[in-house]
Amino acid sequence: MPKFISNLHLEDFFSATHKSGLSSKLVLSSMAFPLSIVSGLLLLDGAFNASITSAGIGILGLIAAQAIKTPGQ
Image (cartoon, rainbow, N blue to C red; front, side):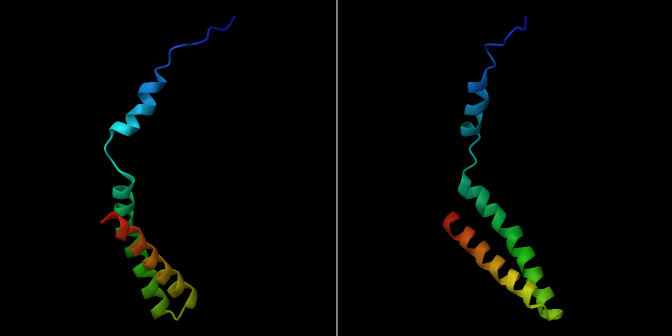
């Protein structure tokens, strides 16, 4: 017969995420900087290679990075 483990201490595991202290605003704000760098590089690539698609994605990425960064401040 299989033995079932009844006490896995799952409440400690799931409550540890609330104790970490990292807010979602801080995480989103820290993601905005790399997104703006990648978007800027795409924008430059689109400008130098005359690629409308790269430039468009770069512009949209810069707008998204600014939108992410603004509520975090």
